[in-house]
Length: 62
Image (cartoon, rainbow, N blue to C red; front, side, top):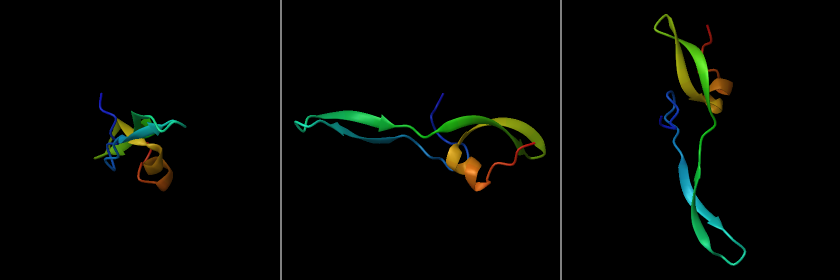
């Protein structure tokens, strides 16, 4: 299952963990996705949505 918000399309970001000795290892930051029941085209549908979309009111709950 992909880690992408179904509303805004937010995806994991890529960067480095940097140690004190400046050794770099690859790291991914995942969006905070939640499974939420929403109303879409008059039907209640379960979607994977980030918490930013839930807080901003883009998700209409049944």
